Length: 190
Ligand code: S3P
Image 1 (cartoon, helix red, strand yellow):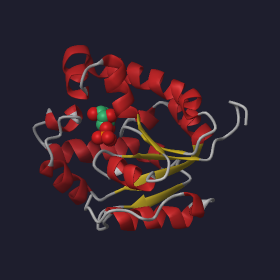
Image 2 (tube, rainbow, N blue to C red):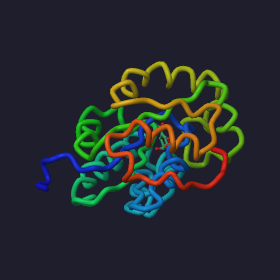
Image 3 (tube, rainbow, N blue to C red):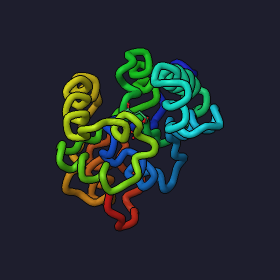
Image 4 (tube, helix red, strand yellow):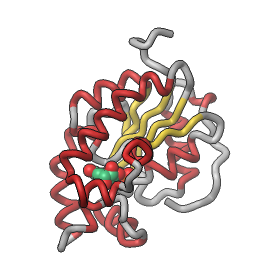
């Protein structure tokens, strides 16, 4: 397979706290799991929180773009699961590159579910939420602005009221190559 053809990977896109990392790791039990936020942190030797704080969002987006550009070579001909950051897809060049990697699945959740999950964790990787006065309004605005980008996925799955393994099953059922991704996942909640 040449570097210009689509690999058999699965790419998870979607808003913050929709479960991309936990679902991605569970879906990837038998293959490689790549998280673009982790790639940025490793490359910069700095947490997302510190990148936003010290270098700003614009710099973070540049780092993110650079790591997305490297994905095709990183993946090679392997089957991988790739989780992206919530804002990765607002760059049309990123989305084009992600589509080259395989099927793009958007994880969705209701505003209330996102808010509840976001409040239950430290949000240290989500400066766009932790730095706001009114998290509900911030989520609402970002969701509205990004809706159009998320809808560009091959298909969407709502994770609001589902456990990780249920979401994995829903994804596997809709994939072109369902047998190739694991359904044997833990019972952890998102
Ligand atoms: C962001 C989402 C975060 C992280 C960064 C920016 C966004 O990733 O990339 O804080 O713009 O929505 P998660 O979606 O994994 O939280």
